Length: 266
Length: 266
Image 1: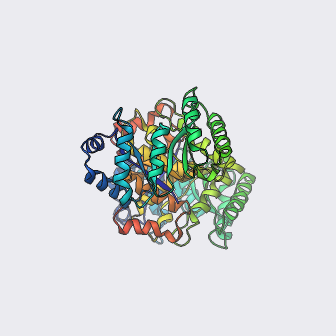
Image 2: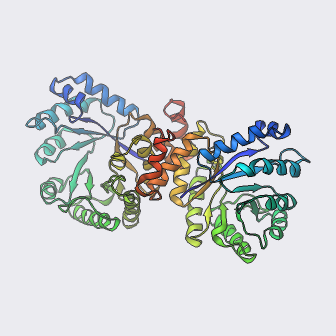
Protein backbone atom coordinates (compact mmCIF):
# COMPACT_ATOMS: atom_id res chain seq x y z
CA UNK A 1 0.00 0.00 0.00
CA UNK A 2 1.10 3.52 -0.84
CA UNK A 3 2.45 5.53 2.10
CA UNK A 4 1.73 9.25 2.36
CA UNK A 5 4.20 11.40 4.27
CA UNK A 6 2.22 14.49 5.31
CA UNK A 7 4.33 17.57 4.73
CA UNK A 8 2.29 20.30 6.38
CA UNK A 9 4.04 20.68 9.77
CA UNK A 10 6.94 22.74 8.45
CA UNK A 11 7.89 26.14 9.82
CA UNK A 12 8.63 27.34 6.30
CA UNK A 13 4.82 27.48 5.96
CA UNK A 14 3.65 30.87 7.15
CA UNK A 15 0.71 29.78 9.29
CA UNK A 16 2.68 26.95 10.88
CA UNK A 17 5.55 29.30 11.69
CA UNK A 18 3.15 31.76 13.32
CA UNK A 19 1.55 28.96 15.34
CA UNK A 20 4.97 27.69 16.47
CA UNK A 21 6.17 31.19 17.39
CA UNK A 22 2.97 31.76 19.41
CA UNK A 23 3.09 28.24 20.90
CA UNK A 24 -0.44 27.76 19.55
CA UNK A 25 -0.82 24.05 20.26
CA UNK A 26 -4.47 23.92 19.14
CA UNK A 27 -3.53 24.96 15.60
CA UNK A 28 -0.83 22.29 15.30
CA UNK A 29 -3.00 19.56 16.84
CA UNK A 30 -5.86 20.40 14.48
CA UNK A 31 -3.58 20.28 11.44
CA UNK A 32 -2.05 16.92 12.43
CA UNK A 33 -5.48 15.42 13.10
CA UNK A 34 -6.67 16.59 9.69
CA UNK A 35 -3.66 15.02 7.97
CA UNK A 36 -4.23 11.74 9.81
CA UNK A 37 -7.92 11.73 8.95
CA UNK A 38 -7.06 12.34 5.30
CA UNK A 39 -4.85 9.26 5.27
CA UNK A 40 -1.32 10.37 6.14
CA UNK A 41 0.85 7.37 7.07
CA UNK A 42 3.63 9.56 8.53
CA UNK A 43 3.62 13.15 9.80
CA UNK A 44 6.73 15.08 8.77
CA UNK A 45 7.91 17.59 11.38
CA UNK A 46 10.31 20.32 10.26
CA UNK A 47 11.25 23.16 12.61
CA UNK A 48 14.11 24.56 10.57
CA UNK A 49 12.80 27.91 9.39
CA UNK A 50 13.20 30.03 12.53
CA UNK A 51 16.96 30.44 12.58
CA UNK A 52 18.44 29.79 16.01
CA UNK A 53 15.20 28.25 17.32
CA UNK A 54 15.20 24.82 15.66
CA UNK A 55 15.95 22.72 18.73
CA UNK A 56 13.38 24.40 21.03
CA UNK A 57 10.76 24.55 18.24
CA UNK A 58 11.24 20.88 17.41
CA UNK A 59 10.98 19.95 21.09
CA UNK A 60 7.75 21.94 21.48
CA UNK A 61 6.30 20.51 18.26
CA UNK A 62 7.02 16.93 19.35
CA UNK A 63 5.63 17.59 22.85
CA UNK A 64 2.50 18.88 21.13
CA UNK A 65 2.11 16.22 18.45
CA UNK A 66 3.31 13.06 20.22
CA UNK A 67 0.21 12.62 22.43
CA UNK A 68 -2.26 12.82 19.54
CA UNK A 69 -0.29 11.13 16.75
CA UNK A 70 -1.71 7.82 15.59
CA UNK A 71 1.02 7.34 12.94
CA UNK A 72 4.84 7.52 13.13
CA UNK A 73 6.62 10.84 12.74
CA UNK A 74 9.16 11.86 10.12
CA UNK A 75 11.90 13.85 11.85
CA UNK A 76 13.02 16.40 9.30
CA UNK A 77 16.28 18.16 10.08
CA UNK A 78 19.87 18.33 8.79
CA UNK A 79 21.17 18.70 12.37
CA UNK A 80 22.17 15.43 14.13
CA UNK A 81 21.89 17.10 17.56
CA UNK A 82 18.27 18.05 16.88
CA UNK A 83 17.59 14.57 15.54
CA UNK A 84 19.19 12.90 18.60
CA UNK A 85 16.89 14.87 20.88
CA UNK A 86 13.86 14.23 18.67
CA UNK A 87 14.63 10.53 18.34
CA UNK A 88 14.45 10.13 22.13
CA UNK A 89 11.07 11.90 22.28
CA UNK A 90 9.08 9.76 19.84
CA UNK A 91 7.24 6.57 20.73
CA UNK A 92 6.82 4.88 17.34
CA UNK A 93 9.83 3.99 15.16
CA UNK A 94 10.43 7.25 13.29
CA UNK A 95 11.52 8.08 9.77
CA UNK A 96 14.56 10.35 9.41
CA UNK A 97 14.48 13.03 6.68
CA UNK A 98 17.17 12.85 5.28
CA UNK A 99 20.61 11.66 4.26
CA UNK A 100 22.29 12.35 0.89
CA UNK A 101 25.68 11.84 -0.72
CA UNK A 102 26.62 15.49 -0.24
CA UNK A 103 29.80 15.12 1.77
CA UNK A 104 28.81 17.40 4.70
CA UNK A 105 25.36 15.92 5.14
CA UNK A 106 26.61 12.36 4.67
CA UNK A 107 29.37 12.80 7.28
CA UNK A 108 26.96 14.38 9.75
CA UNK A 109 24.17 11.82 9.31
CA UNK A 110 26.07 8.53 9.19
CA UNK A 111 27.21 8.54 12.87
CA UNK A 112 23.67 9.53 13.93
CA UNK A 113 22.03 6.72 11.93
CA UNK A 114 24.49 3.99 12.94
CA UNK A 115 22.83 1.49 15.24
CA UNK A 116 19.46 3.30 15.25
CA UNK A 117 16.20 1.52 14.49
CA UNK A 118 14.52 3.88 12.05
CA UNK A 119 13.43 4.43 8.48
CA UNK A 120 15.41 6.92 6.45
CA UNK A 121 14.80 9.08 3.40
CA UNK A 122 17.88 8.98 1.14
CA UNK A 123 18.22 11.72 -1.47
CA UNK A 124 20.05 10.92 -4.72
CA UNK A 125 21.96 14.18 -4.37
CA UNK A 126 25.73 14.58 -4.23
CA UNK A 127 28.20 17.46 -4.32
CA UNK A 128 27.99 17.57 -8.14
CA UNK A 129 24.33 18.62 -7.72
CA UNK A 130 21.19 17.15 -9.24
CA UNK A 131 21.55 13.86 -11.17
CA UNK A 132 21.76 14.18 -14.96
CA UNK A 133 20.51 10.79 -16.14
CA UNK A 134 18.64 7.69 -15.02
CA UNK A 135 21.97 5.84 -14.76
CA UNK A 136 23.32 8.64 -12.58
CA UNK A 137 20.30 8.34 -10.24
CA UNK A 138 20.72 4.55 -10.07
CA UNK A 139 24.44 4.88 -9.27
CA UNK A 140 23.71 7.29 -6.44
CA UNK A 141 20.97 4.98 -5.13
CA UNK A 142 23.42 2.08 -5.14
CA UNK A 143 25.95 4.07 -3.13
CA UNK A 144 23.32 5.08 -0.60
CA UNK A 145 21.98 1.53 -0.14
CA UNK A 146 25.50 0.20 0.27
CA UNK A 147 26.50 2.82 2.84
CA UNK A 148 23.26 2.46 4.83
CA UNK A 149 23.31 -1.35 4.80
CA UNK A 150 26.86 -1.17 6.14
CA UNK A 151 25.75 0.71 9.29
CA UNK A 152 22.83 -1.66 9.87
CA UNK A 153 19.91 0.00 8.06
CA UNK A 154 18.14 -2.76 6.07
CA UNK A 155 17.16 -2.02 2.45
CA UNK A 156 13.46 -2.25 3.35
CA UNK A 157 13.86 0.71 5.74
CA UNK A 158 15.29 3.00 3.05
CA UNK A 159 12.98 5.48 1.30
CA UNK A 160 14.93 6.50 -1.82
CA UNK A 161 14.16 9.92 -3.28
CA UNK A 162 15.28 10.02 -6.95
CA UNK A 163 14.77 13.82 -7.03
CA UNK A 164 12.05 14.90 -9.43
CA UNK A 165 13.19 17.72 -11.73
CA UNK A 166 11.15 20.22 -13.77
CA UNK A 167 9.97 19.06 -17.17
CA UNK A 168 9.83 22.70 -18.30
CA UNK A 169 13.62 22.80 -18.52
CA UNK A 170 13.94 19.49 -20.41
CA UNK A 171 11.12 17.39 -21.87
CA UNK A 172 12.95 14.20 -20.90
CA UNK A 173 13.07 14.83 -17.16
CA UNK A 174 9.83 12.88 -16.64
CA UNK A 175 10.99 9.77 -18.46
CA UNK A 176 14.42 10.08 -16.87
CA UNK A 177 13.09 9.77 -13.33
CA UNK A 178 10.52 7.09 -14.31
CA UNK A 179 13.31 4.99 -15.85
CA UNK A 180 15.42 5.57 -12.74
CA UNK A 181 12.65 4.37 -10.44
CA UNK A 182 12.24 1.19 -12.52
CA UNK A 183 16.00 0.58 -12.44
CA UNK A 184 16.23 1.14 -8.66
CA UNK A 185 13.30 -1.22 -8.01
CA UNK A 186 14.86 -3.84 -10.31
CA UNK A 187 18.19 -3.61 -8.45
CA UNK A 188 16.65 -3.36 -4.94
CA UNK A 189 13.10 -4.75 -4.88
CA UNK A 190 12.75 -4.02 -1.14
CA UNK A 191 13.66 -0.35 -1.28
CA UNK A 192 10.86 2.19 -1.03
CA UNK A 193 10.65 5.07 -3.51
CA UNK A 194 9.50 8.44 -2.19
CA UNK A 195 9.92 12.17 -2.79
CA UNK A 196 8.16 15.39 -3.54
CA UNK A 197 6.28 15.55 -6.82
CA UNK A 198 5.53 19.19 -7.46
CA UNK A 199 8.98 19.97 -8.90
CA UNK A 200 7.90 18.19 -12.08
CA UNK A 201 5.51 21.05 -12.95
CA UNK A 202 7.74 23.97 -11.90
CA UNK A 203 7.50 26.77 -14.46
CA UNK A 204 4.34 25.44 -16.14
CA UNK A 205 0.71 26.57 -15.81
CA UNK A 206 -2.10 24.41 -14.35
CA UNK A 207 0.39 22.57 -12.16
CA UNK A 208 -2.06 20.37 -10.25
CA UNK A 209 -3.08 18.24 -13.23
CA UNK A 210 0.59 17.69 -14.04
CA UNK A 211 1.40 16.68 -10.47
CA UNK A 212 -1.46 14.23 -10.16
CA UNK A 213 -0.97 12.67 -13.61
CA UNK A 214 2.69 12.32 -12.74
CA UNK A 215 2.06 10.54 -9.43
CA UNK A 216 0.13 7.79 -11.21
CA UNK A 217 3.01 7.32 -13.69
CA UNK A 218 5.51 7.23 -10.82
CA UNK A 219 3.38 4.66 -8.98
CA UNK A 220 3.31 2.51 -12.11
CA UNK A 221 7.12 2.72 -12.18
CA UNK A 222 7.37 1.65 -8.53
CA UNK A 223 6.96 4.73 -6.31
CA UNK A 224 5.19 3.58 -3.15
CA UNK A 225 5.40 6.71 -1.02
CA UNK A 226 5.36 10.48 -1.48
CA UNK A 227 5.90 13.62 0.57
CA UNK A 228 2.74 15.58 -0.10
CA UNK A 229 -0.08 17.58 1.44
CA UNK A 230 -2.69 14.97 2.44
CA UNK A 231 -5.32 17.73 2.40
CA UNK A 232 -4.89 18.04 -1.39
CA UNK A 233 -8.02 15.98 -2.08
CA UNK A 234 -7.43 15.57 -5.80
CA UNK A 235 -3.94 14.11 -5.55
CA UNK A 236 -5.05 11.83 -2.69
CA UNK A 237 -7.97 10.59 -4.82
CA UNK A 238 -5.61 9.88 -7.73
CA UNK A 239 -3.29 7.95 -5.41
CA UNK A 240 -6.15 5.81 -4.04
CA UNK A 241 -7.39 5.17 -7.58
CA UNK A 242 -3.97 4.29 -9.00
CA UNK A 243 -3.31 2.02 -6.00
CA UNK A 244 -6.49 0.12 -6.90
CA UNK A 245 -5.63 -0.06 -10.61
CA UNK A 246 -2.17 -1.40 -9.74
CA UNK A 247 -3.64 -4.32 -7.71
CA UNK A 248 -2.78 -2.94 -4.29
CA UNK A 249 -6.40 -2.77 -3.16
CA UNK A 250 -8.14 -6.15 -2.75
CA UNK A 251 -11.79 -6.05 -3.76
CA UNK A 252 -11.41 -2.26 -4.33
CA UNK A 253 -12.10 -1.86 -0.59
CA UNK A 254 -9.97 1.24 0.06
CA UNK A 255 -11.30 2.88 -3.09
CA UNK A 256 -14.91 2.21 -2.11
CA UNK A 257 -14.20 3.40 1.44
CA UNK A 258 -12.77 6.62 -0.03
CA UNK A 259 -15.85 7.13 -2.20
CA UNK A 260 -18.18 6.57 0.75
CA UNK A 261 -16.17 9.08 2.81
CA UNK A 262 -16.59 11.63 0.02
CA UNK A 263 -12.82 11.69 -0.55
CA UNK A 264 -12.91 10.40 -4.14
CA UNK A 265 -14.91 12.45 -6.61
CA UNK A 266 -14.74 12.19 -10.38
CA UNK B 1 1.97 11.37 -30.38
CA UNK B 2 -1.18 9.85 -28.90
CA UNK B 3 -4.01 9.29 -31.40
CA UNK B 4 -7.62 9.82 -30.33
CA UNK B 5 -10.32 7.88 -32.18
CA UNK B 6 -13.51 9.90 -31.65
CA UNK B 7 -16.33 7.50 -30.83
CA UNK B 8 -19.38 9.77 -30.95
CA UNK B 9 -20.79 9.04 -34.43
CA UNK B 10 -22.44 5.76 -33.48
CA UNK B 11 -26.12 5.03 -34.02
CA UNK B 12 -26.25 3.23 -30.69
CA UNK B 13 -26.16 6.76 -29.22
CA UNK B 14 -29.73 8.01 -28.96
CA UNK B 15 -29.25 11.52 -30.37
CA UNK B 16 -27.07 10.26 -33.23
CA UNK B 17 -29.63 7.60 -34.11
CA UNK B 18 -32.40 10.22 -34.18
CA UNK B 19 -30.29 12.51 -36.37
CA UNK B 20 -29.51 9.67 -38.77
CA UNK B 21 -33.15 8.55 -38.95
CA UNK B 22 -34.21 12.15 -39.68
CA UNK B 23 -31.29 12.71 -42.08
CA UNK B 24 -30.33 15.71 -39.96
CA UNK B 25 -26.97 16.51 -41.57
CA UNK B 26 -26.43 19.68 -39.52
CA UNK B 27 -26.40 17.69 -36.27
CA UNK B 28 -23.84 15.19 -37.57
CA UNK B 29 -21.62 17.89 -39.12
CA UNK B 30 -21.64 19.89 -35.89
CA UNK B 31 -20.70 16.83 -33.84
CA UNK B 32 -17.83 15.86 -36.16
CA UNK B 33 -16.49 19.43 -36.20
CA UNK B 34 -16.56 19.51 -32.40
CA UNK B 35 -14.65 16.22 -32.18
CA UNK B 36 -12.05 17.49 -34.63
CA UNK B 37 -11.67 20.80 -32.78
CA UNK B 38 -11.20 18.87 -29.52
CA UNK B 39 -8.30 16.95 -31.05
CA UNK B 40 -9.73 13.75 -32.57
CA UNK B 41 -7.20 12.12 -34.91
CA UNK B 42 -9.80 9.75 -36.41
CA UNK B 43 -13.60 9.92 -36.53
CA UNK B 44 -15.22 6.53 -35.95
CA UNK B 45 -18.43 6.00 -37.95
CA UNK B 46 -20.77 3.22 -36.84
CA UNK B 47 -24.21 2.82 -38.43
CA UNK B 48 -25.02 -0.60 -37.02
CA UNK B 49 -27.83 0.09 -34.57
CA UNK B 50 -30.80 0.53 -36.94
CA UNK B 51 -31.30 -3.10 -37.96
CA UNK B 52 -31.75 -3.47 -41.72
CA UNK B 53 -30.57 0.09 -42.41
CA UNK B 54 -26.83 -0.20 -41.89
CA UNK B 55 -25.73 0.14 -45.51
CA UNK B 56 -27.93 3.14 -46.35
CA UNK B 57 -27.20 4.83 -43.01
CA UNK B 58 -23.46 4.35 -43.46
CA UNK B 59 -23.65 5.72 -46.99
CA UNK B 60 -25.57 8.80 -45.82
CA UNK B 61 -23.21 9.34 -42.87
CA UNK B 62 -20.15 9.19 -45.11
CA UNK B 63 -21.76 11.49 -47.71
CA UNK B 64 -22.42 13.90 -44.85
CA UNK B 65 -19.08 13.65 -43.06
CA UNK B 66 -16.60 13.22 -45.93
CA UNK B 67 -16.75 16.85 -47.17
CA UNK B 68 -16.00 18.37 -43.75
CA UNK B 69 -13.64 15.79 -42.28
CA UNK B 70 -10.08 16.99 -41.79
CA UNK B 71 -8.92 13.67 -40.32
CA UNK B 72 -9.24 10.07 -41.55
CA UNK B 73 -12.34 8.04 -40.76
CA UNK B 74 -12.62 4.80 -38.83
CA UNK B 75 -15.10 2.55 -40.63
CA UNK B 76 -16.82 0.59 -37.90
CA UNK B 77 -18.82 -2.43 -39.05
CA UNK B 78 -18.70 -6.22 -38.88
CA UNK B 79 -20.14 -6.45 -42.42
CA UNK B 80 -17.58 -6.69 -45.26
CA UNK B 81 -20.18 -5.54 -47.82
CA UNK B 82 -20.80 -2.33 -45.86
CA UNK B 83 -17.05 -1.86 -45.46
CA UNK B 84 -16.40 -2.39 -49.21
CA UNK B 85 -18.90 0.33 -50.03
CA UNK B 86 -17.56 2.63 -47.32
CA UNK B 87 -13.95 2.03 -48.32
CA UNK B 88 -14.66 3.35 -51.83
CA UNK B 89 -16.31 6.49 -50.45
CA UNK B 90 -13.48 7.82 -48.24
CA UNK B 91 -10.65 10.03 -49.48
CA UNK B 92 -8.04 9.55 -46.75
CA UNK B 93 -6.62 6.12 -45.91
CA UNK B 94 -9.19 4.80 -43.42
CA UNK B 95 -8.96 2.69 -40.30
CA UNK B 96 -11.11 -0.46 -40.20
CA UNK B 97 -12.86 -1.33 -36.92
CA UNK B 98 -12.34 -4.31 -36.50
CA UNK B 99 -11.00 -7.82 -36.92
CA UNK B 100 -10.72 -10.42 -34.16
CA UNK B 101 -9.85 -14.11 -33.83
CA UNK B 102 -13.51 -15.09 -33.49
CA UNK B 103 -13.85 -17.52 -36.36
CA UNK B 104 -16.85 -15.89 -38.07
CA UNK B 105 -15.47 -12.38 -37.89
CA UNK B 106 -11.98 -13.47 -38.87
CA UNK B 107 -13.22 -15.39 -41.91
CA UNK B 108 -15.40 -12.47 -43.01
CA UNK B 109 -12.75 -9.77 -42.55
CA UNK B 110 -9.63 -11.40 -43.96
CA UNK B 111 -10.77 -11.43 -47.63
CA UNK B 112 -11.92 -7.81 -47.27
CA UNK B 113 -8.61 -6.64 -45.78
CA UNK B 114 -6.36 -8.54 -48.21
CA UNK B 115 -4.60 -6.12 -50.54
CA UNK B 116 -6.24 -3.02 -49.01
CA UNK B 117 -4.23 -0.01 -47.89
CA UNK B 118 -5.71 0.73 -44.48
CA UNK B 119 -5.16 0.71 -40.76
CA UNK B 120 -6.98 -1.92 -38.77
CA UNK B 121 -8.12 -2.36 -35.19
CA UNK B 122 -7.43 -5.94 -34.06
CA UNK B 123 -9.30 -7.20 -30.99
CA UNK B 124 -7.63 -9.83 -28.79
CA UNK B 125 -10.89 -11.77 -28.72
CA UNK B 126 -11.43 -15.35 -29.84
CA UNK B 127 -14.22 -17.90 -29.67
CA UNK B 128 -13.18 -18.81 -26.12
CA UNK B 129 -14.18 -15.26 -25.09
CA UNK B 130 -12.25 -12.59 -23.22
CA UNK B 131 -8.57 -13.30 -22.52
CA UNK B 132 -7.76 -14.63 -19.06
CA UNK B 133 -4.15 -13.58 -18.58
CA UNK B 134 -1.46 -11.26 -19.95
CA UNK B 135 0.13 -14.25 -21.69
CA UNK B 136 -3.21 -15.08 -23.27
CA UNK B 137 -3.53 -11.51 -24.60
CA UNK B 138 0.01 -11.63 -25.99
CA UNK B 139 -0.63 -14.95 -27.72
CA UNK B 140 -3.74 -13.60 -29.38
CA UNK B 141 -1.88 -10.44 -30.44
CA UNK B 142 0.84 -12.62 -31.98
CA UNK B 143 -1.73 -14.58 -33.98
CA UNK B 144 -3.37 -11.40 -35.23
CA UNK B 145 -0.08 -9.76 -36.27
CA UNK B 146 0.98 -12.93 -38.07
CA UNK B 147 -2.30 -13.28 -39.96
CA UNK B 148 -2.47 -9.61 -40.90
CA UNK B 149 1.18 -9.43 -42.00
CA UNK B 150 0.52 -12.44 -44.22
CA UNK B 151 -2.16 -10.58 -46.21
CA UNK B 152 -0.02 -7.48 -46.59
CA UNK B 153 -0.96 -5.32 -43.57
CA UNK B 154 2.27 -4.05 -42.04
CA UNK B 155 2.68 -4.19 -38.26
CA UNK B 156 2.74 -0.39 -38.07
CA UNK B 157 -0.81 -0.27 -39.47
CA UNK B 158 -2.22 -2.56 -36.77
CA UNK B 159 -4.00 -1.00 -33.77
CA UNK B 160 -4.11 -3.81 -31.22
CA UNK B 161 -6.93 -3.73 -28.67
CA UNK B 162 -5.96 -5.85 -25.63
CA UNK B 163 -9.56 -5.62 -24.29
CA UNK B 164 -9.81 -3.80 -21.01
CA UNK B 165 -11.86 -5.73 -18.42
CA UNK B 166 -13.58 -4.51 -15.23
CA UNK B 167 -11.44 -4.29 -12.13
CA UNK B 168 -14.58 -4.70 -10.00
CA UNK B 169 -14.72 -8.39 -10.89
CA UNK B 170 -11.02 -9.05 -10.23
CA UNK B 171 -8.49 -6.64 -8.68
CA UNK B 172 -5.78 -7.93 -11.02
CA UNK B 173 -7.49 -6.98 -14.29
CA UNK B 174 -5.70 -3.62 -14.37
CA UNK B 175 -2.22 -5.07 -13.94
CA UNK B 176 -3.08 -7.92 -16.33
CA UNK B 177 -3.78 -5.58 -19.23
CA UNK B 178 -0.87 -3.26 -18.37
CA UNK B 179 1.50 -6.24 -18.40
CA UNK B 180 -0.01 -7.40 -21.69
CA UNK B 181 0.53 -4.01 -23.32
CA UNK B 182 4.18 -4.01 -22.23
CA UNK B 183 4.63 -7.55 -23.58
CA UNK B 184 2.99 -6.72 -26.93
CA UNK B 185 5.13 -3.58 -27.36
CA UNK B 186 8.27 -5.58 -26.48
CA UNK B 187 7.40 -8.23 -29.08
CA UNK B 188 6.17 -5.76 -31.75
CA UNK B 189 7.58 -2.27 -31.18
CA UNK B 190 5.79 -0.90 -34.26
CA UNK B 191 2.30 -2.04 -33.34
CA UNK B 192 -0.13 0.56 -31.99
CA UNK B 193 -2.13 -0.13 -28.85
CA UNK B 194 -5.70 1.14 -28.71
CA UNK B 195 -9.08 0.33 -27.21
CA UNK B 196 -11.89 1.61 -25.08
CA UNK B 197 -11.04 2.43 -21.47
CA UNK B 198 -14.30 2.75 -19.62
CA UNK B 199 -14.72 -1.01 -19.10
CA UNK B 200 -12.07 -0.79 -16.40
CA UNK B 201 -14.47 1.07 -14.08
CA UNK B 202 -17.62 -0.93 -14.85
CA UNK B 203 -19.54 -1.61 -11.64
CA UNK B 204 -17.69 1.00 -9.56
CA UNK B 205 -18.76 4.49 -8.46
CA UNK B 206 -17.05 7.73 -9.60
CA UNK B 207 -16.00 6.10 -12.85
CA UNK B 208 -14.39 9.14 -14.51
CA UNK B 209 -11.45 9.38 -12.10
CA UNK B 210 -10.78 5.65 -12.61
CA UNK B 211 -10.91 5.98 -16.41
CA UNK B 212 -8.57 8.95 -16.55
CA UNK B 213 -6.09 7.58 -14.01
CA UNK B 214 -6.11 4.34 -15.98
CA UNK B 215 -5.39 6.02 -19.33
CA UNK B 216 -2.18 7.52 -17.93
CA UNK B 217 -1.07 4.09 -16.67
CA UNK B 218 -1.90 2.53 -20.05
CA UNK B 219 0.08 5.26 -21.83
CA UNK B 220 3.05 4.56 -19.59
CA UNK B 221 2.78 0.88 -20.59
CA UNK B 222 2.70 1.76 -24.30
CA UNK B 223 -0.87 2.60 -25.29
CA UNK B 224 -0.66 5.29 -27.99
CA UNK B 225 -4.29 5.50 -29.08
CA UNK B 226 -7.75 5.16 -27.56
CA UNK B 227 -11.37 5.03 -28.66
CA UNK B 228 -12.96 7.75 -26.54
CA UNK B 229 -15.24 10.77 -26.53
CA UNK B 230 -12.98 13.71 -27.44
CA UNK B 231 -15.53 16.05 -25.84
CA UNK B 232 -14.71 14.52 -22.42
CA UNK B 233 -12.47 17.45 -21.46
CA UNK B 234 -10.98 15.84 -18.38
CA UNK B 235 -9.75 12.67 -20.06
CA UNK B 236 -8.39 14.69 -22.99
CA UNK B 237 -6.50 16.94 -20.55
CA UNK B 238 -5.03 13.90 -18.80
CA UNK B 239 -3.93 12.46 -22.16
CA UNK B 240 -2.20 15.72 -23.18
CA UNK B 241 -0.52 15.91 -19.78
CA UNK B 242 0.64 12.29 -19.75
CA UNK B 243 1.91 12.68 -23.33
CA UNK B 244 4.08 15.57 -22.12
CA UNK B 245 5.31 13.68 -19.06
CA UNK B 246 6.25 10.72 -21.26
CA UNK B 247 8.49 12.89 -23.51
CA UNK B 248 6.12 12.98 -26.47
CA UNK B 249 5.73 16.75 -26.40
CA UNK B 250 8.87 18.73 -27.23
CA UNK B 251 9.20 21.94 -25.21
CA UNK B 252 5.75 21.16 -23.70
CA UNK B 253 4.27 22.87 -26.79
CA UNK B 254 1.05 20.85 -27.11
CA UNK B 255 0.46 21.10 -23.39
CA UNK B 256 0.91 24.89 -23.41
CA UNK B 257 -1.31 25.17 -26.51
CA UNK B 258 -3.98 23.17 -24.67
CA UNK B 259 -3.74 25.43 -21.62
CA UNK B 260 -4.02 28.57 -23.77
CA UNK B 261 -7.07 27.09 -25.52
CA UNK B 262 -8.67 26.51 -22.12
CA UNK B 263 -8.67 22.75 -22.70
CA UNK B 264 -6.38 21.87 -19.77
CA UNK B 265 -7.55 22.95 -16.35
CA UNK B 266 -6.20 21.72 -13.01
